[in-house]
Image (tube, rainbow, N blue to C red; front, top):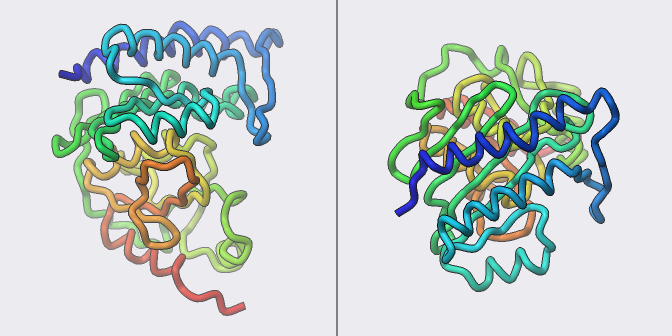
Length: 269
């Protein structure tokens, strides 16, 4: 039996102990920052978080291995190939934000069973917000249920969360020349982006290339909140694979249909 309340406490305590003190120490240049093979950043905070959470999970659930972002690709693939039940951990999503002193980052944990996400927890230590969901049981934010809601805002007056740098160039050009929304933001943490869409804090979302640990928990939270999502190819977002996935999403169904129709329209240039 998985205790989701204990998981929330684990992520909160780990973030409070390993992330916040290091984030506060940035001004004194006491944080070690390195670059991984793919060019993305990794800090001592990423490593400390993974070690702490992985150790606690293996102690509480010794028969469920942990696939963490900071594990090697070979280790990650072996776990996906061999394990029926598996934790998917992103110890620090938004590392670039964290290293730059931008207060928008989080930690994400999902439980994968037979290729399906059964529960997900995302914790934002700056705002002390915990988003969580269990399959078929709805989604919550700090205990309050996240519900689908009909927005009265039309798409052309909406706010979009978009990561431009990983999108097809032709789509970027269309969005820059004739955006169907009023304004856009790029906040730099996929796990929090998905949760903020689930909470109705922005109207539509678009990301061209997320990894398994970026979308596992957030995709379930959005789904259980009543939201809608697919890839640029029209497929379900979640796939138990290390291959990157794109994400088109919105909480409101009509807004999602309009957004998806714009993105999927043939390029006329």
